Amino acid sequence: MTEKPDALTMAVIQAGLTQVCNEMDIAFTRSAFSPVIAEADDRSSGIYAIEDGALIAQGEFGLPVFVGTMQHSTAAITRLIREGRVAPPEPDDIYIVNDPYLGGTHLMDVRFAMPFHVDGELFCWLQNTGHWPDIGGMVPGGFSAKATEVEQEGLRLPPVKLFKRGVMDQEIYSIITSNIRVADQRIGDIKAQASALKVGANRLAELVARYGVATLKAAISDMRVRAAELMRAHIAGIPDGVYRSEAFVDSDGVVNEPLRIVLKITAQGTELGFDFTGSSPPCRGPMNSVVATTYSAVYLAVRHIFPDTPLNAGAFEPLKIVRPEGTFLDARYPRPVSGCAAEVSQRIAEAVFLALAKAIPEKVTAAPAGSSGNFALGGFDPAKGAAYVMYQISGGGYGGNIEHDGLSNGCSTIGISKTAPVEVMEQYYPILFRRFALREGSGGAGQHRGGFGVHYEVELLRGEARASFVMDHGRFGPPGVQGGQDGAPNIVRIHRGGEVFTPEHLSKDQDVPLKAGDRVEVMTPGGGGYGPASARDPALVARDVLRGYFTADEAARLFGEHA
Image (cartoon, rainbow, N blue to C red; front, top):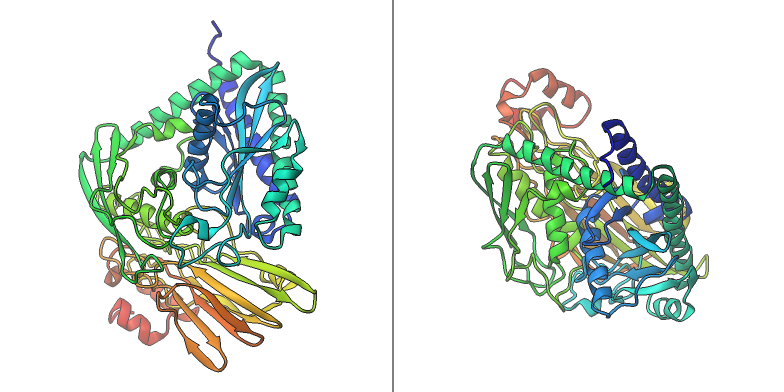
């Protein structure tokens, strides 16, 4: 029987496994072709158990929403292999999969999974996810706001070996490139994604050589136990009780009515129960969430509140989620899902924040902007003689908390992805950013106000293009807590042919035709305020006015006479 590693060895191994994932993330970013990966970091890497797909480690630079989804994805791959529906793994194989119903998000998030063998025996899985800028479907970029079935959103891939013993299968590659736009550019991202896994395999092999298989397995098992213990200790600090909240999605893009998320959190001892019974039924449009994304949204929300918990499957064991069957949070084939990861997951996290703000207000923020601001532009650039697909994400305000104001222009709740530099985007695509600035006044007023969103305008310089949006929080601003006011809602305006219009679904539309000189203007949400605005320090109000965040009249209206 292998002796359990001592505390120092445990710490070194845990850091070593995280570093393996970090290096995979960095290698992926540095070698990827698409700006959404190379500049915006829309990707993640992790190590997963062979038995059940459980998360062993994830990189510190990866998207939190992929924590749960890749765990579900690995579990699905191993199950299909056991059932004989997928070919068993051999050394240097790499499977590709983007099927959202098999532990995924939307179709643009493409997952590569590589078995890691030691002395001919499967030890674990290495997996990464990268956001491809296009996967086919109705609109460039894949974010179809009006899709009513998943086939309209793009090419759906079950787990299949894209690389067999290290050699890419040209037939499968041809199938993929025959079904997506700007196909000649995808080889760069594919090779980057595969190479990142190989970097991880090399680094993991060094850990195995240093400590041995038995010691690593013992350490991984103990890490999982310790993460569960720490999460249980955090939960024990939440007063026992039932805490309820609601959150709303603007619309599904097809039916112009809000979708309702109903959440009941039950704190009992060292466990938290999550029940979404009463949420809206499956919707016609693309704002359905597959169950892996729903679970992952709960995981990431709780980890936002308790960030010191180690990132492995043990941290999720005390979180008991009732599968939300019969709701739009448990999408089944063929429901469209392009908005699930970027938008619906953030409403789920928001519901968790709003519920737990009643129980542990000292640890929870008001609602953040809660939208990734998905904006895709596809067209033909006559100057370069080539087609293109541009994908843009944008930041927003974070909610205020008990200690300070919310962060301005923060990344989305679900990840660390950032807006690609405007200079890079202008080099790649026939566009010009006419404006890129803080959206003053957008933070919800409060003792600690919400952070500010972003205000940008993109002009098409030449040729013709089609614009598509899948955003949210256009109907309702991010809610404040403890008496704080809501942040400003999302606003999208199209400046075309001398006229200005807002999409019917506010922040969702597709196939909007643009010509040279037309502009798209976006104002992202501000965060919710924390505590009553009348309690804000007058010196902080004066500072905000001096910096131009609010006018003097706005400050007086929002924060009272003492402003």
